[in-house]
Image: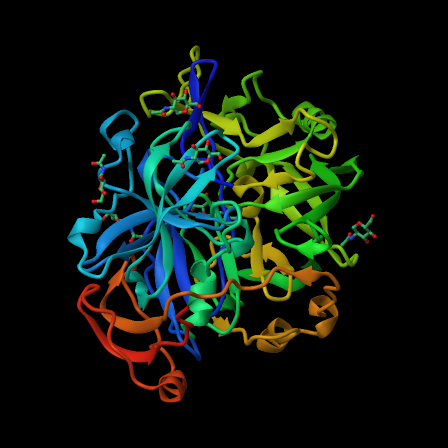
Amino acid sequence: MKSVGSTVLSGLVLAFAVGEAIATGTLEFSLMKQKRADTEPLRRRDAVEDDLIGDFNGQDGVAYYLNVSVGTPGQLQTVQLDTGSSDFYFTASNSSFCDGTPGCAGGTFDPDKSSTFSVLQAGGFNTSFGDGSTDAGDYITDVVQVGDLAITGAVMGLAYQVNSTVGAQTGLMGIGYSINEGVQPGQAPYPNFPESLVGAKAIASRFYSLFLNDISQVGSIIFGGVDTKKYTGNLVTLDFFPTTEDQVTNFIIAVTSIDVSQGGQSQTIYNRPFLVLPDSGSTAFTVPNSLYEAIVKLVNIDDDGTAPCNTIYTDTTFTLNLTGSQDTSTTLSVPLSSMFTPAYTQDGSIAQDPTTGAALCVLQVQPDTSDELGTIGFTTMGDSIMRSGYWAFDLDNGQLSVAQAAINATDSNIVAVDAGPGMLAKAIDQPARDTAPTQTAVVAQTATATVAYSVATAASTAGHATASAKPSKAAGARFGAGEGAAGVGGAAAVVAVAVGMVL
Ligand SMILES: *[C@@H]1O[C@H](CO)[C@@H](O)[C@H](O)[C@H]1NC(C)=O
Ligand SMILES: *[C@@H]1O[C@H](CO)[C@@H](O)[C@H](O)[C@H]1NC(C)=O
Ligand SMILES: *[C@@H]1O[C@H](CO)[C@@H](O)[C@H](O)[C@H]1NC(C)=O
Ligand SMILES: *[C@@H]1O[C@H](CO)[C@@H](O)[C@H](O)[C@H]1NC(C)=O
Ligand SMILES: *[C@@H]1O[C@H](CO)[C@@H](O)[C@H](O)[C@H]1NC(C)=O
Ligand SMILES: *[C@@H]1O[C@H](CO)[C@@H](O)[C@H](O)[C@H]1NC(C)=O
């Protein structure tokens, strides 16, 4: 899911947002607060690195964005990263919503200014979100550049009719299963961005890792691999729960219990399982109402969910037991402080306590007021929880591998993960015990491509200072030399081409 922006509560604008999963292969994007000082190249296969932005549009920690370039010449788009949705789309430059307030942020796309643009399906794109936001328009293809990788043949949405109910409209990179795309009823899904990367042989499988990091630091996303320096302990692999008709179509795991440690004392505050979607496109953790009541009792917040930032308890940590459908489980420690984000007023400034003038923060935990299991069978576990973890989404195998994030780590050791069951354990040389493939349900398949892909290495990067490895020579040899993705930041060195099907 996504929600960008803020909602008004008791005179405050409380920011919240929704994210989605992204991953595979060996493209890294830093989720950033500041530029990374240095980056290491990927060891093998194809690699691209880019930054992710955590303080976009004046709001900290509520959503994560990355810069991509679309069209020829490239038009910069700053898009929200969302594991909770599946379309990759931008706002058209002539959308009337952009003329008003809050308008459109992060760039818009003018198809008339791109020489490589083409419409794939006019009126085919139509999506809506839980917050009431809507986006509709055409499915298109054009060159898209992420880091130094330029890919043609990727299908994207171009939204002409947009309405963001919670703040400025931005584009979105939804990286969930393509089966959840906003296609018209009866229409087949198209390969979305992670699937296009696989189709273009830029990465080996639908696999990506997300490291949001501390709210003040640089995070990253790696398509096709993991960074073994960004977590502690072992990655533990959880099988996604099947959603529809015994098929895995979404990133659903369970929270089976929650303990809290406060002032040196530990207690279990909740021990009834509920299903959650780790959603980078949501800021908040939405929890059963009774759990919300239990959490609120332990934290010192006002009725509107805010507290002076300097009064947030630093001695309070929650421990979530995360469990997959085949009973493998792990625990994730989440300090209370990382569950808060700054509170903003409607004019965008930091909200202050009316009596003391202290800056206010808002607890990013929300009650699910419907029932204990949520109206849609699962709740969203947004950035307020995801910041504490390292999350390797393996769409092909229907699994999520989780470890405690190495918050503030600056070292990097990026390892590509091959396609197939058990390849994560192999790549990171970890005992198979924690990463054994056990998924027994059918997993949603990659959509069929209707356009041919080609991949090029661009001379200049989009959204990131440093580039890493080039597309593999092997892929180029196997598929033959192709044409360049013209003009994205001066594209050069084309290596692989045309592995998609033209229908
Ligand atoms: C917006 O631009 C598209 C593509 O150029 C065009 O087809 C459409 O008519 C325009 N819409 C408006 C409202 O100008
Ligand atoms: C998108 O779909 C919704 C729900 O079916 C419909 O009400 C709306 O008119 C559609 N929007 C566009 C622009 O086609
Ligand atoms: C956007 O959606 C809101 C909530 O549904 C509605 O009140 C508003 O009129 C819509 N705005 C536009 C420009 O369509
Ligand atoms: C998580 O909870 C389950 C069910 O209560 C339990 O069997 C398992 O040992 C717990 N896992 C961890 C890592 O504590
Ligand atoms: C990470 O760095 C930030 C900024 O320096 C600091 O506030 C925070 O406490 C650090 N977190 C950890 C877990 O070290
Ligand atoms: C993204 O693009 C914006 C606008 O050009 C720029 O200010 C920002 O530094 C870029 N961020 C990254 C991480 O590339």
